Image 1: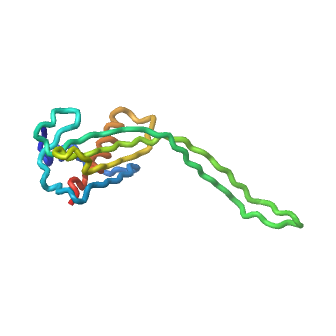
Image 2: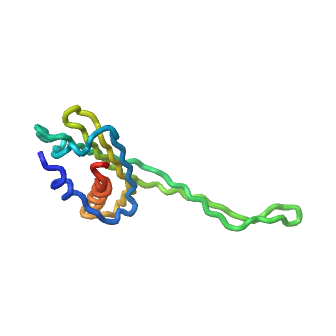
Image 3: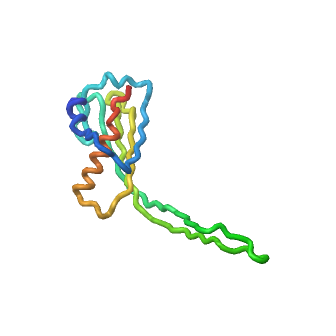
Length: 145
């Protein structure tokens, strides 16, 4: 069991999180001010006010870009000019989900999601930094006011 603000503050890294998109949602009726300690779901949770869990996943996505030039014109009874081309780019998007569960009721009270395109060329250190930035961005305004 860990103290909320001392332990979570050590996880939060406030840095530029370019390319990381986030969203959060929470139970607006819950009193987050009553929380003082947490535990991870897979650890001993005795006495913890809330539990935290995380989920990760990847999904292949495609982006279509169409480029064109020329406006075309009318020449002696024929329409001509202008060309377009479409390119398809396939990429992998990684997602990290953080869940906060009320320890007493065992109900989800807060969820944050962070997504970013995965760069296959990133080193393990760069990937760890990306995860830390995502967690920092998600928990920046936790607990919600």
